[in-house]
Image (spheres, rainbow, N blue to C red):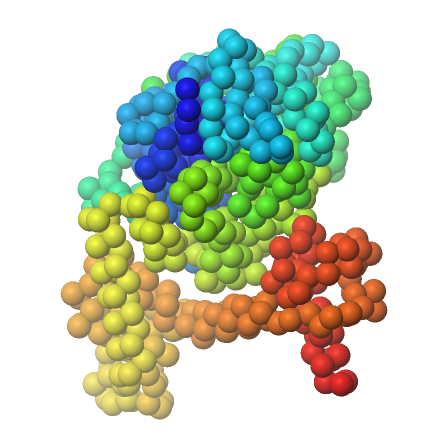
Amino acid sequence: MNYDVIVIGGGHAGIEASLAPARMGVKTLMVTILAEQIGASSCNPAIGGLAKGHLVKELDAMGGEMALATDATGIQFRILNGSKGPAVRGSRAQIDMDRYRIYMKNVILNTPNLDVKQEIVEALIIEDNKVLGVETQLGNRYMAKKVIIASGTFLNGLIHIGEKKQQAGRQGEFASVKLAEYLRGLGIEIGRLKTGTCARIDGSSIDFSVMEVQGGDENPTPFSFRTNRESFNPTQLPCHVTYTNEDTHHIIESNFYRAPMFSGQIEGMGPRYCPSIEDKINRFRDRPRHQIFVEPQTLEANEYYINGMSTSLPTDVQLSMIRSVKGMESAKIVRYGYAIEYDYVQPTELKHTLETKKIEGLYCAGQINGTTGYEEAASQGMMAGINAGLSVKGEEPLVLGRHEAYIGVLIDDLVTKGTKEPYRMFTSRSEYRLLLREDNADRRLYRYGEKLGLLDEEYLAKVKQKERDIAEAVIYLKENFVTPTKEFIEKLLSLDEEKINDKVSLLDLLARASMSSEKIIALVPEFKKYSDEVVEQILIEAKYSRYIDKQKNQVDKMKNMLNVKIPEGFEFSKVSGLSNEIIEKLEDIMPPTLFNASEISGVTPAALEILHIYIKMAQKAR
């Protein structure tokens, strides 16, 4: 059977990788090991978080599904860092992981141009370094112009629980072993990583009365820009917080010799920012306790995820250490925690489109590229799906710049720097954080979704009107001024605002840290015509106007810089500040412009800045 795009995998990356081309009118096939596990949350029952929420919002802005699924199945919504600046805030939601899976499966099965097959891909069909399709364990051959591998942890997956090992991609599910062997045979650089998950506890065996309660936001904000904020009123369940103690630490330490990560049983590198509990105890011996979040997995709240206690210790040790924690003295384990090793493709093997450099038409997305997290996976899935679809149509690829989206930062980091450990997104990874906020993701990226045909007309009309309203309001604030008249000073004092001594623009006045949406309406009654969402954006634009303009100037400077030509015969070895690796690659490829240099794996933005300075110096010396 012939398709345009085949996607291997039905996880978070595979879902977005399948939906994007199908919705673009491209005939697509998803091949997954277990159809009922499409959209399964292998680890924590949550979507979003710091920087991760940015990724989900950006997906949504272009027409992705993750945010809509979260709003439909969420059971607690919170804005993290809510008291800090908008650039570092992050949306996070607990999801009903059963309902989320069912939601995603139904979306996949009801999407035109998208078929699903429950089979295991064992090999690719390749001729002259060009992918032509896939072969499955049933002997079926499916032909396609493009293939996207979104295998998650299934590629040669190996589960560890104490001394016990089990070949699996997820507990109870087959691993993809033959495909892993096949990829190694292609000469693609393959590495080994490790991640893990915690035990799940029977809710009826937990004493929540002795734990701290962590509720959702009183007025929850939906993830999707396409969800109606006024009618959004989800049922919210509390999470709870408890802590490990000296007894817990003693139990774990006394069993280090049985821990696969210390015994040499595990070879893969684990996630730096989400370590197992045994790793935390080993690295931070001086800490008397570690925080544990007890999170419901479904609306029925009969099973809880013990966030902060990821482990691969033997089952008897898991039970003992969990029961040493306050509130879990009588805990009953439903599912034991485990570590899992899996193969990944070194992402420097990929172009910015996520197509492999060695095999034409073959793309990789998600954990196979060395990332960790549902959100990072979904982001790559959507971009791989979009680019595969565009290539089928004979159109130019879509590559988001670092100044445009966190998705652009994520992919650029991966394909230029590579990774030796599971990569996780942070706001600190972006040079342009003030421009790349969660709240403006829709305005930043809707044009791409519109061009690709992934957004409906009703939503597009709404976001375009929002954009016009904000632009109109900001111009008004810049062009209108207030003076320190007696009446105006009294008005300011009535709002608990400091008086002004000179004539100032409304934009400068609203830039005060003490300003709020309510005060804006009081000071500028004309803005009552705008929605609450628009007024919130006006406030942010006013407060950060100068900083935003500064970052926009930096972006323009970078764009201009990338157009700079590299002189013929330029001696890269004489540029101090460049690593030997970068010099070697530049001398080998001899890029004609800084833009071409930026496309070379390992050449960082900092390296480009240094090159730019030396090129200018060389030009002046002539």
